[in-house]
Length: 155
Image (cartoon, rainbow, N blue to C red; front, side, top):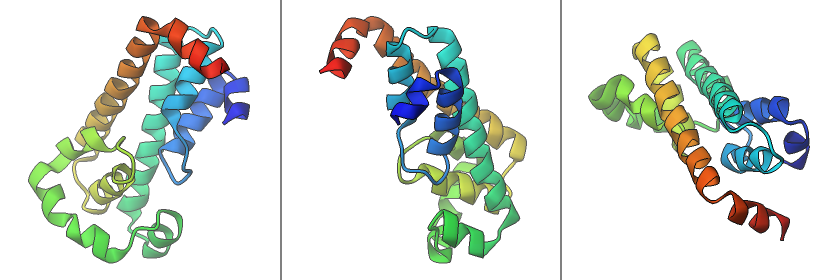
């Protein structure tokens, strides 16, 4: 994680992308770390959102391809899990993409949306909105409590 922070905006983009796929890491912590180094708040918001959104779209398109060997190997998604999501995906449709940023279930939502071929444009749009809102909350918290964040990070 420290390496990504040291890379600045590029590290934030790559780390945010990877965090929304198969790599267990936190894009939120990475965002705060880059902000603590003095990076521009709004550029960080845009970079983190773009990286995380593109990573989520990658999960969506892997679901769209429907290759079980990939889903089981890279995402550890079993066929039964995806089939149990069918009702939820059908009920909420592309609105479910607002929650693809959630830990643990977010990747499954993105894969399921792609697997069941739920409106690619709307899914992508709502995925972008959800991820932007998530990072906006972190940016606003950082701006409001920057001194405390920096003090906490340096302990």
